[in-house]
Amino acid sequence: MKYECEMIEDLLPLYKDGACSTASTRAVEEHIAECPKCKEIFNILQDTKIDDMIALEKEDVIGSQAKFFKRKSAVAGSIVAGIFMIPILICLVVALAGGNGLGWFFIVLAAMLIPSSLFVVPLMAPKNRMFLTMTSFTLSVMILLAVCCIYSGGKWFFIAASAVLFGLTIWFAPFIACRRPVNAYLKNFKGVAVMAAYTFTYFLMIICIGITVAAPGYFRLAFSISVPLFIIAWLMFLIIRYLPANGLVKAGVCILMMSAVGYLGSLAIAYFMVKGAETMDVLIYSDPSPLMMIIGVGIGIIFGIIGILVGKRGGKN
Image (tube, rainbow, N blue to C red; front, side):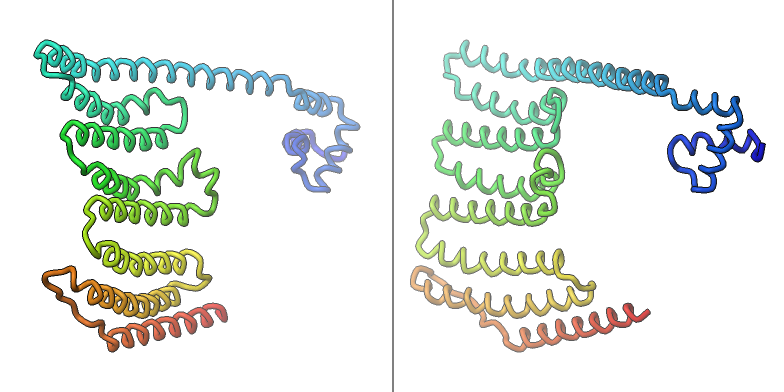
């Protein structure tokens, strides 16, 4: 025979998987046509029953372990939930025995929803634990604020709820956008979705505060300050995220944009402050400086030019 059996035996697994070169494939085929021993080894390699059995056993082991841990998590979640029920039941008994009504009972009940959302939900949820934990925590905080507001007779719920929602959005939105099931819908627009969530919850807070406070000139002043700031934030995000340029060019564009939009925004703020001066006891403001805007634009242009030159030089190299 032209080839050694040991060499062909080393090539048989590669030949079976179709990973051999053309010359090696020809050598294996010529050899197994003449060598019964190597042909038998090749036939054994082609038998996939053992591989199928191993794969099935692996799936069974993984499935049984997953069920085991799910049962353990459910038991642990039930125990933790039972522990959280103790102060609720104690408060209920004391409230009924004292005859003072159930006001404090509902406050304690709403308060216990917060630790339950952090400990029970992750243990009991079969999937999407982070998403369900964060959303249930946010909902439980809103319920606690609502109960406290109702039983205190206050009118501050919408201010507190919108402010808390904005704060929680700042912390939770990036994590929720990157985890199941939300990430499957957002795909490559996670950053835009997070920025949109920040913008929506912030202006919702501003609107809730304005409706509750009902101060003259509030909305004019609040929006004249907030809108330019959010325009700058959105433009910076879009430049950094989507502008096809190097870091120096992006930095230059951001500096230029911040200088120009900041100057125009300062003019808008000053205009609305003067226009609403009749509703204020004291008005203190300073005119925006055109010189600072010109300096900022110049620095931005310098950064952009340096970035373009560096980019061209890197392209040549």
